[in-house]
Length: 254
Image 1 (cartoon, rainbow, N blue to C red):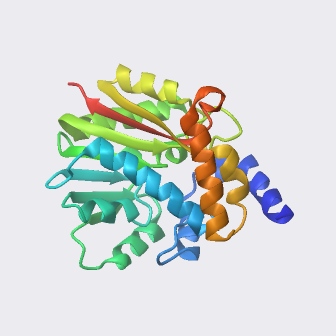
Image 2 (image 1 turned 90 degrees about the horizontal axis):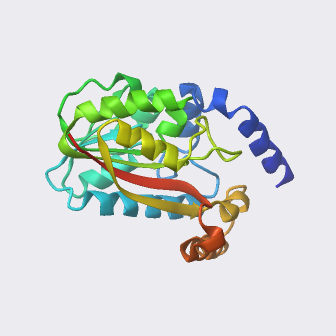
């Protein structure tokens, strides 16, 4: 445990350099190939995160059947497969080549169109009904100006009335990944660039996450600890703002 905590602190001190490199994500994808999620060693915690993140995206989209959706920074394709299973036509990209290889291998017969690409290279115009991302902006972007660049590209890529839905660890603190930006700061960028913010939600109580992510704790312990944290987060008050990730849904206004 002590070694794991020390390693986590060391990675956090270097995260701006490490997390922005494709090699880091390629290695994580190789280490967690198959059904595992390459977030933390504790797969039960990863499952709790994924369940809540997908629920936020599902609610923001509504019925995805027949919609043309771009999964931005798709990793190994878990969200892409989830949306495709509900009838969406999905395109997906990631800047880490190994993650795309694994995504394709998960379901070789899938209709999902995967490609290796950076978020800064989105070139489509009025193409997508939805652009969705989990943990992409806070790794791909080093500054708020970088976020603004991608937001403008997404605005151009969406059809009028299209939706931009992200689930990101927005923080301006030691919890930040590469990007240091609050949810309010992100919302301001959206509204300056032709979006209407429709929904914001705090996800995952981070004081519970810190110990739970350090080891592959038994599932009952993990689930109990996770949902105890969720209850505090839902209570609001002094616990408000302690979400590890934030869900933000916006609509292209023009």
